[in-house]
Image (cartoon, rainbow, N blue to C red):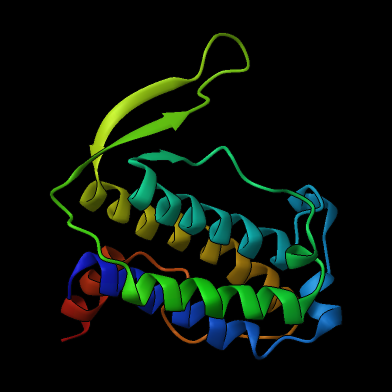
Length: 168
């Protein structure tokens, strides 16, 4: 499986889980999670994918240039439509994983933003890790609402591979 397909598979997992939620469970928050519910985590993940897709055409990925507090994190139907749209865009993205790309990041509240050189392949690896990390939080929040994700949702691929080797 290539990196683009791995990301598309993760987005499809998100669509499957979101389709099992309703507005109440989607919007539920817990003070222990700083008020960030399932919607906020999905919106954050989507923002990163949109930053990546924009970077394909611009040659610069800016993960910090994202919207916050949008309808996407408050309305289940909007989030689901956005997730499906980003998944479609990723499926048809013409990305050469070897191509270099500049990445901008705010690494501190003081000083200038930092730029580094990466590759689209490395950034696709980052998106897998970032998405799985947020999916783990989404999985916990979902379970707290009585919705249990499929096995493996929010678990790192390397962990799943290890668990499969141990069980064999």
